[in-house]
Length: 464
Image (cartoon, rainbow, N blue to C red):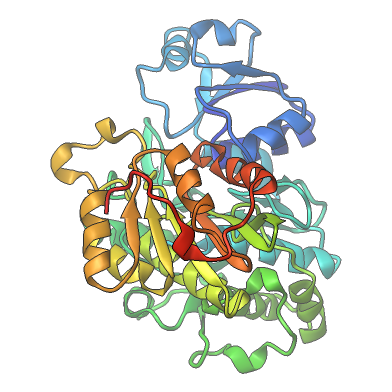
């Protein structure tokens, strides 16, 4: 059996989790990437996995028997080129998962545009608390376990089932590789516009996923989505629906107080999906309640980075407009009566584009103030397709939302400091590290006096 595996693109959320699984299973694991940032970089460091900064053919000199190639790595990547030239064995992430971890397990997959990471961790935690010791792999670090993976000794393996493509040599979505025994479908909205230029193509990917479910497979589908209702019109599997007010599992079936980590309507729905699937797997209501009420959440999902002088600083992954809107709803519920300042970095391939412009105008409506950072690496997006944050700020202002486009991260921190008051919440939304802006704000909050009267705010260069 092979023992030495290299991961090209190891700091991606899925790849970093796979690295942890391989290490825990006894493989000699090493990997390379261009950028290393939390929480995955912290996890890799804790695991003591040797890392190579940047991509270089020499990174394979240590003699791996196989190379797992991340989906962000193109064919002309120097490590990929060496793999192809020397005819080394290579796999995509889902192929590696299937080969090394899923063969002898019953896969439980969480799919959907939104809520996958939280729902997957929640499902794994409920099963673990019930004594079933599942394996799991998620694209984010859970606060209960401090990890994004676990081998587990039980029959089930819980995984976040991503609709993004698998690798340059496998353009199929990852989730069609898993053939789950049970699944949750949280939502289907247009996302990943770089690989799904039309919504219809994305719907086709979910159709392909549903075809991988066998007649004995169990699907818990969100009841409040017309798209999902259409996709599941003639199921060839066991179908159950969940929703706050309609479906086989509704809010009245949650007989426990949900913890702060599950605040907001979206997380209530996530909990319902988990509760429904667990009931179908044979867990009792008491077992499910025990898992739900002890769930602590996930890093970068409404994660409190610090509270200084009654100012709460939060880090969240939200980037799609629906995720932005629903996270704002959750934060307003979680911090009633407190002023919410939302700071948004367009960083994903979708959020940097103008495809969802009108939806962003609606998404930020619930925030008390919106600060817009420049799109990350804007030169990678054609100008005609690029999100114009200055125009977005102007249009939000016209709709009654106080919004500003600010040119750089240090200026954002200064602007917040000059207008912040006690008992306020600052939420940073980005699917990346946002240049560690949360830490910069917390450090400066420690050293500066909080403005009690916002009329004292001095001018700073901002673009409205």
